Length: 160
Image (tube, rainbow, N blue to C red; front, top):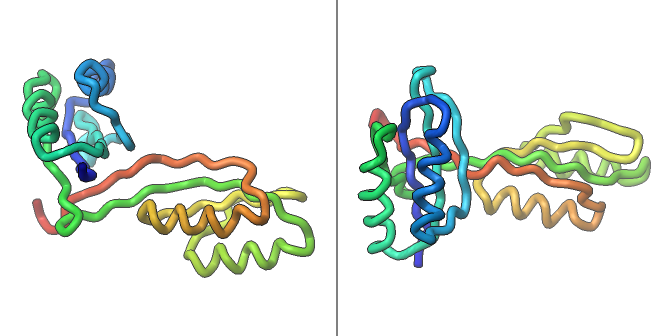
């Protein structure tokens, strides 16, 4: 079993995401991560799907997704030839005694404080899953109140 990341270019209209994810659920394939957004062309969206499976299953997924009417292109994003990122918003409990300490860790991770309240800070962090998980682990002793993660998104390197 290995992790595969697929970049699926689709027509940008209602119901397309439902058809793509429905294909996964009907076949019993588990989606580990999913992100969707408009591309440089507003008529087209990019769906980035991360799945853990074996090579035979990923071939089946690709063939079945390619058959969907609204799918323009499907490409596997290999780790060596692609850039992956995820965004997370993390709300952490702070006191006047540890606020500076938390902000110091935020700076080390090149994250950003996007909201400050009397007893909490909300932090925005981007990076790979390992970086975000490491940051969350360091924040746990302070009290992680809530986390919102976008899911993995990616592009291939170079002009392709």
